[in-house]
Amino acid sequence: MSATPPPTSPVDPENRGAADGETISTSPGWPHPIPRRTIVQGAAWTVPVVAVAVGAPLAAASPAPTLAFTNGPYDVATCGTLKDVTLLLTTNGTTPDPGKTVTVTLPSGLTWSDGTTTPKVFTTDASGNVTLTGIKATSAAGTPTITATSSTGPTAAAVVTVTPATTSAHTYIPGNPVWNWSSVPSGATAIGNGVFLAQNGDLYQNNTVIASGVTSANHVFAPGPGPRITWVNASGGHNSTDGGATVTNYPAVPTGSTAIGNGMFLTPSGEVWSTNAPLVVNGVPLTGVTSAIYELPDSSGRLNYVTSTGGHTYIPGNPTVWNWSSVPSGATAIGNGVFLAQNGDLYQNNTVIASGVTSANHVFAPGPGPRITWVNASGGHNSTDGGATVTNYPAVPTGSTAIGNGMFLTPSGEVWSTNAPLVVNGVPLTGVTSAIYELPDSSGRLNYMAGPTC
Image (cartoon, rainbow, N blue to C red):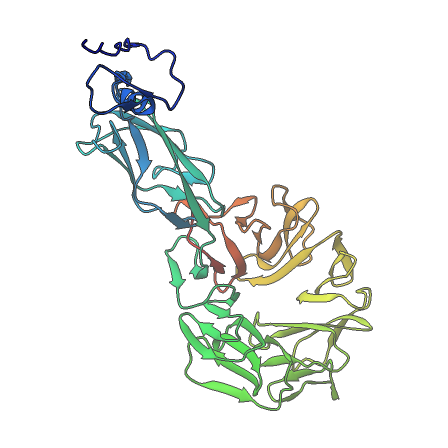
């Protein structure tokens, strides 16, 4: 009897009935049973790949036109002319845009070369450039901003640094060219006729230093020896004619004395010295002097001074001293019987001719005679010595300084002649820090410290 074959195990195509980790047989005779986990792991490699959509890049933004100042920084001194200013207009930041208009506006403190300030329209050249030529600064220091707008839209701005101009020395005879003494440093004081005292003590005659360590200096026009410069330094007193190589030295004059004119000095102790010794008046040295000025309207000269007993006028060699007892002690000698009291009363001899005076000056004018110029709250004024007629200049700004014969230096640095600003070479004289006006002849002579004329 033949043996019966064993029954065949049915195939479970979905692997049902097998626990995780069991071995499942496939078909009869399969030589190697396959673990279920191997099938699962292998199936992972058969998962279809899902495509992920990626957006296309956005289109690049179009470059914008630009306008720019290209040759800064921009620096200029007051009343000076700025270097050429260049702007560049482009279509895209790099490509020049020719033939387009650009409107440029100047701020306060800057003007065009013709003196106007209204905006100007320019056209870009073949390179897209606009060049601004001849922009000028006014007398105001600061940081004004130039602005520009193009017809294509973009705008630009540039700051200009305006610094105070360096002042220099000048001499001006009305109706003539101005003499410029460029070697004289800023901050010097005008003494007269091309004479200036620098802050470091150097005394200049035009462009030449004639003395150093100077603490006081004076200039007068002497009818005999000519214009005279008198000064004091550590080696005593000194006197010379304008530009003269010969200097007369007075070594005995005390240090710290004040030069008051043509070899005359007021010492710190209140003595008046003439050349190298105390001045003797009617046999007695002149002492107790608080203020003095020496003028030279003629060969003998005239000394005006103040003591505790009032004002005085003395002509050397003349035994008579004119005493003006109404003048209060502490007043300042201005010249030829003219004194300014501390309370602002201005005296001519014993008479008050003006009140509230803040500044006064006296000169000997060869034509109309001695002239008194002063300033008070009602403006500027001028009169002859003792004259009943006073010429008034009400437009002269309050606080101005009288510098001689109807000439004034305003607080803002303008020089006024009578009732209006002084015009020199077609423009008002501004930026003045020190000035004195002398009258050696009918035209007069103005010496001043100032920067370039605006």
